[in-house]
Image (tube, rainbow, N blue to C red; front, side, top):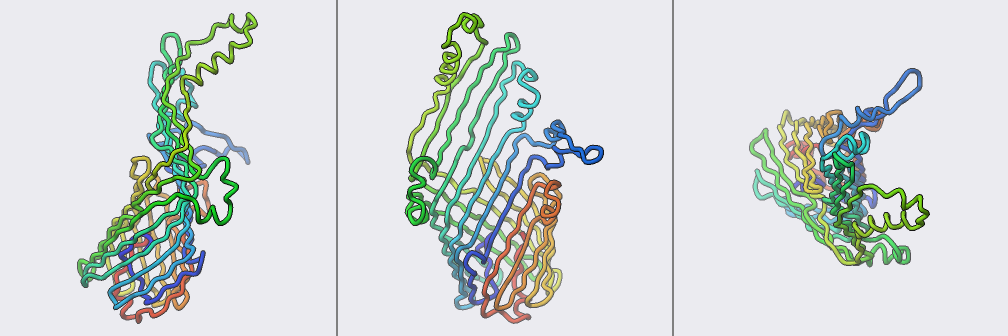
Length: 415
């Protein structure tokens, strides 16, 4: 249901235990592993291999972190073909993108790029908000089920700095520097006064609101093949409380300094230089409202029924950030050992890395407990991988289908 609102639980009534029904954590990066940077030497010695690390980077790289906790959730099936759900979810995301050429420039020095315009583009989004959602799924026919979720969003903190660019050029003749910047950074929930509203005003009364929708569909082609598609977190938040807007769009030329200004005892020589740079960039500050988009996600899945208890799945995934689609693909095997115990195994390619082996299981009776991870290797050797994540939860499930009816239900793709 979290990745496709057209999915309906087998139980008639589902109640999530507060704070425990779903806890999700993810940490990933597309750039380099720790072992790409830190190399083992003789004995217990280690050394940094900067060049090896740089060779592992793509043209654009990103670091992502996410935490989601269900504060409250429940759902009920009506007239067999309808399912209505409600949830309150606390969500926090960090997405940071950086270019490879910036680290090349820092490591090799500007002298290695004489006469070249070094363009650096960065993106940063840090967001913390609460989501109140109402979901509805309906089985249209024996083949097609559709669903959607309407969500009201309450924002608490945000840092948004997307498509910020900086250009540096070192003249090949006189080695003078020319810099240009185009920076726009918005923040909400930071700075003076934010500490005074801690408690109820912080949790409920900040004036940062928005809307989002989820939409999904599941299509059973025949007894073997089932296809699914969904779009998650398509929405926005308008930030109005404790906002700050920082902009800079300037240029600065540095052709060196006249050393005689310093040797002659001019005490203002250094201040004149720094003032010139400050005036050139001219960072402006305002306190206006602004709007940000959520990091929307798209899923495309296919399942093949191997037997009454087993199926294989293929899932394509993508998340949008800084005008970039960050892709992943996962293949899975899902087995229902009994009517109350199921297991899954998956292999994924994500964050430009193929070292991702996932496992999961669910014990489902009146009380359901489940744990699933896209990459369990990261919990044992985190320095060797680029992705670590897990989702687990405890739910109460009443009015489940019989074993035979459950075996005929559409199987959901393992993520």
